[in-house]
Length: 68
View 1: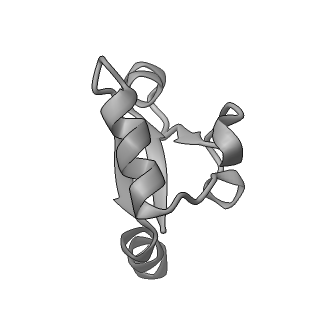
View 2: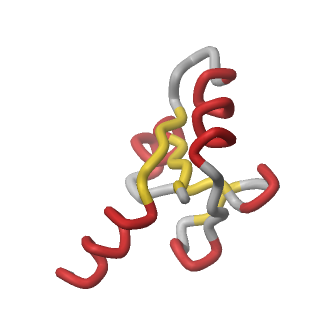
């Protein structure tokens, strides 16, 4: 599973902005972020014509949170 990060809001706002489930807005709280299948995440990133959405593995996020 993958989180989607919106780089435009993240870089401009100074905080990480993640897509919510069902593409229903954004959140800065990782527990409120949506999780997307790899295929869905790839398709959403592909459709982003500005290429400002990136996918991040749930496993990577969990590892980072454990190390923090």
